[in-house]
Image 1 (cartoon, rainbow, N blue to C red):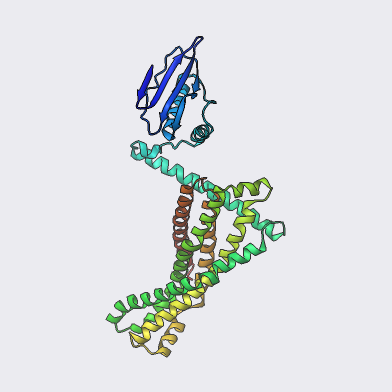
Image 2: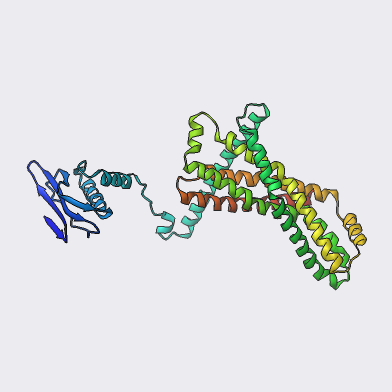
Length: 372
């Protein structure tokens, strides 16, 4: 039962009482695979590398293959004689998790099965989200009574990152949004010689909804995704496990400062976006539509209500909570490899946008139904 290819030699030598010796000799560098068929009478195999020359990863692959064959046949394998480097590589390969094929992709599912699996995934995601929100609520209650354990320095840093740190990008997006709304609104209004109502279009649209939505979208990509990446990296590096080992709640120490920072600053971010959006719309109205500045401001004040501003602020506050929860949840629930961090970051962005769309629909329907 010997196989020879070049300078790599493998031989399985049968002994008495069902024992055998697997002899690897020669140069095992970029060596081809060998036949590892084992007799049914073999009960245990001992690896012999006394005459082994130079070797590389292909040699370790042969030992790994031999181990799999022995495991399938119920044969004991003793590879303690391997060189230290080869033994460590083999143990690393054995300990590596095996990636299983996704049953959703490996087989064709019928319509009902697909609906069932999707429903199950939605139910699991909802349960996970509610459980995380409940834990965060407990952490907030503990903070109110002075029992939550987190660093005020971390909270100050998160307030800065979600507020002044985002000023430039939010103001730029808000200004451009106002410019776009003014150009789009002027198209139908010109048909009725009512260009002055561009001020109403911009004021109501920005203050009531679009300012909060655009600010939320920017912060979901800027802060929410950053939360998922930061916490996901901590999960991979086992920093979160270390906190739990020391008796420190990751929800309190890591999630709470980020949640408070984004939730507190989000209404201010929306107000900044609204301000620059109105300035952008005003510039288009004055220099492109030839609307006098005084007339623009008069029409804006006449048609825009304080209620519109309040609804926008409340909406942005809700968006801040949702983005922080989605980002931190995806980070805390991240897997333990680098790929999982990327998936968690992407999932946080998608989850934030979906939650914002649902919240926008709910707030809009409720406020319109109540006459606000």
